[in-house]
Length: 171
Ligand SMILES: C[S@@+](CC[C@H](N)C(=O)[O-])C[C@H]1O[C@@H](n2cnc3c(N)ncnc32)[C@H](O)[C@@H]1O
Image 1 (spheres, protein in one colour):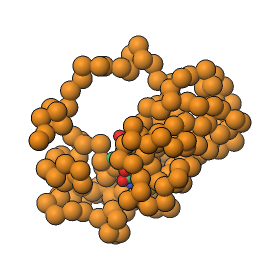
Image 2 (cartoon, protein in one colour):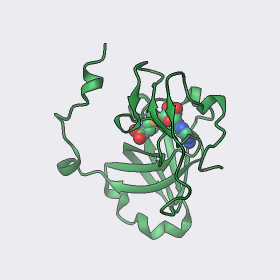
Image 3 (cartoon, rainbow, N blue to C red):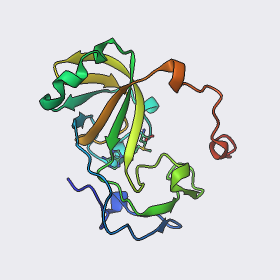
Image 4 (cartoon, rainbow, N blue to C red):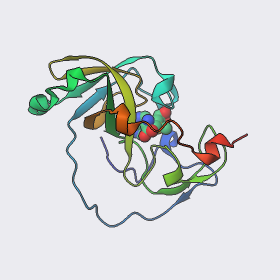
């Protein structure tokens, strides 16, 4: 699977009004994919736009190399999952989201198209079986690379009165 889309397919191409920039000549860091995410979705059109819209059970299929890193995960009610949107373009700085119509800067959006296409979701943990971690409600295509798993701490991660002004004020 490609990690950088220089010739995006129609499914992941730019929309009218979107702005792309030239990417830096090289990257600064190397990531390890720690596994793959198994979901029911093969096509972008079928994929939920966020995890809260999805009831499906998804599997974090962790590479056995990292098995010991899962010790204790089974005690968590919720996890933060970080994943790599490998089919996204990485050069868009201004985007027109499918669902909102109005253009916004990439860093004001949760779009998968970003310089480093890292996605995150907070999901309920269902069970851990060996190196398979079963969760509910992810929004990525089947086979999406898994970057990290972290415990969700309601005490520090929850900010109930946080606001995204453009989203709150949209028509
Ligand atoms: C709006 S993003 C949100 C991702 C994550 N929950 C976040 O907030 O960072 C979810 C969308 O990314 C797209 N997507 C899913 N898997 C992808 C992949 N492997 N590569 C590129 N785009 C993907 C789908 O259109 C999906 O609806």
